[in-house]
Image (cartoon, rainbow, N blue to C red; front, side):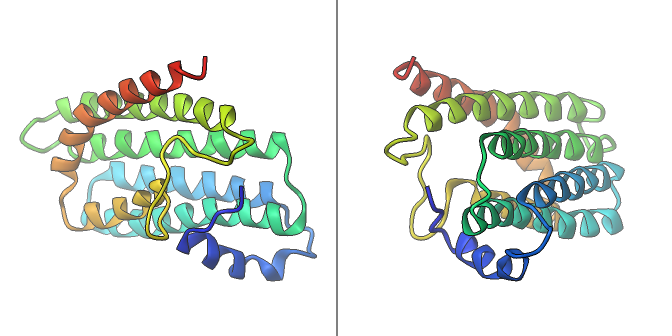
Amino acid sequence: MVGDSWTHKLARICILPLVDTPVTPNHLTILRLITGITACCMFAIGTQFWNIWGGILWIISAFLDRADGELARVSGKMSESGHKLDYICDVTVTALFFVGIGFCLRNSAIGLWSIALGFVAATGVFIAEIYAEKIDQAQKTTGEKAYPGFAGFDFDDVLYLFAPIVWLNLHFLFLIGASIGAPAFAALTWYKAKQFS
């Protein structure tokens, strides 16, 4: 299904110069993975300097996640293997964000428990993503998604907010909420996926 969110439309414009070049969607996907993991490592360091640069790279990585799909569609280079690579990178980067901020907050009021909470949130994200993908694949013919967007925004456009959350030093509260919310969301997604089994 062609993405119609604002970021999809912007990405569609940005990738046009790449359409007739040797650059493939998989190149952008790998670049998305590299920038995303690097951002998470920067967050893990836990200083304001690295949080700022980590946030910038995070936003670039999130945008590349839009750009690879748009390049695949516009250039006619869509493939099942490309989709799987994109999916694996998405799950990996999103889950590692919580691990990264868990390490970032190791000197906070909850100490090393922040690392454990980061892994709990990451596990919840990982499981939710697996079941959301199953729902999406089951509805492939209709183009419906497990969690549709609204008002020109996709559900996963929320990823763009992760960087400002860190910049505004709200990641402590965000981590606490995610350590509860992500497993609950995973359970909800599993429940929704059962009807497609």
